[in-house]
Image 1 (spheres, one colour):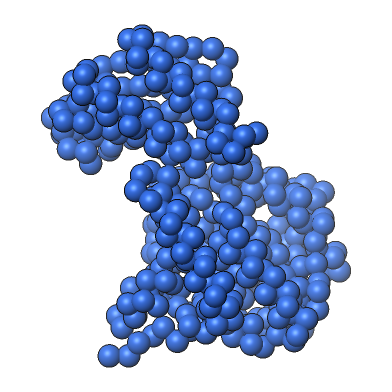
Image 2 (cartoon, helix red, strand yellow):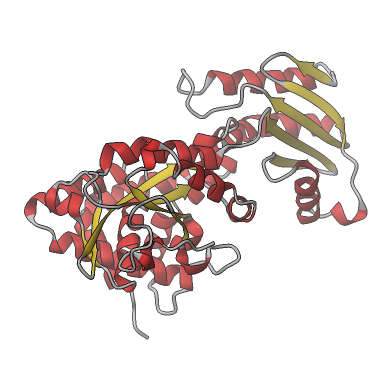
Length: 397
């Protein structure tokens, strides 16, 4: 059988094997048992997939693995083709991608954008890396050029209640819940509304807001109270009523999701015959699409030169399949993108595209957007109907 890991090995060599090995050791150490560890594994799914394929081989890769291998090859090939200054810049981007909470996603997004446009008949020039341009890619087709920005925005920027902070809270509370359920057998539901939200970035390393909420939950239980509320949080402890179909964990989570909606943060702790569910929401709806709008309004005037039509290729990170489908099906991204295109900041933008990890990993519709991306054309741009640009700008919805 043929091992298809050569592109992955080429990318690791371009990054630097010592740096890669150190990064993977750091990620594996962080992926400890617990909700936060599993969340970290989801964040670094790309790096962990590469590592697994390099260790075990890729004789029969899945569609997602095939995409990872192909894009890794594109990125390694780009590194080899760049002039010295461009290669040095790419090396600095590799180093940044391997630091802290960063990932390789922005670089994979960059080469994926290039691949999409090549397949549509465009010549692709990595202008930022090769020439130091403010935009990422220069596209050319039939004598017409366009500038492309390949940017990543986190869905967390549109949430008052951060998923990372939530899973850290759950891991803190869980040991206490195990002990509490042992002496209070039964089924319980703790509803939480957090008007101030819950953010991962707080003044202290451990997060003062996180510690405060943890303390309030444990005091509520230890003092046998049913409610606790102030301007920062509203906590209500109620019996958990289960229908027959909810007896299994899968049925329970499905029922909870139907009751509390897709934006709720849910966690289940079981001990013996006891079950404790925590369900939390922010006081307002998530504004993920609005966060994308704000990011576009920030980068378009700063990075497009205004001498050519511009395309904003936005990667929306930190979304799951359900949230991504809702953002598309309820036209939230489309609404914000089209509103942005009416603003002065978008005067040089001929189109906006949006993708997520679903498209990057080659997931099929309906979980991913058809044609590999959502695309919204700016009807007021003078070149919006130029046939040379049509494959990259014609709206996909």
